[in-house]
Amino acid sequence: HHHDHGPDCTCGCHDHDHHHADEIFTSWGQETGKKYDREQMRMTLDVLAHTQEYGSVLRAKGMVPDTEGGWIYFDLVPGEFELRDGEADVTGRLCVIGSELKEDELAQLFGLK
Image (cartoon, rainbow, N blue to C red):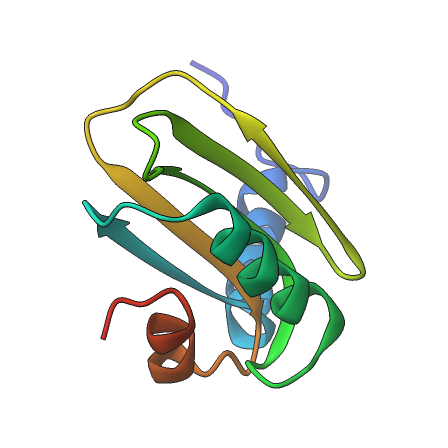
């Protein structure tokens, strides 16, 4: 058996990159059963997309039940976001990725506190 882990082997580099990314970006994720008002979610995402109040947000996505009995799927990058209807899931999920995220404030923004 000839295992040649030459200088091009990706194992080491990959670990290093991964560790490096962890230092810069954090992700905040919550599961929630809370029902969201579509208009309110739009305003929430608008704040998240256009301010640095909650840290430097790179990406946010999630799916939550809405007050009308449907589900809101959202996707956000700095400066823009979209809401769309999606399939019902077991539980709502929120995920925000960025650096220096203020987790408590995010929880409040999404009405989880």
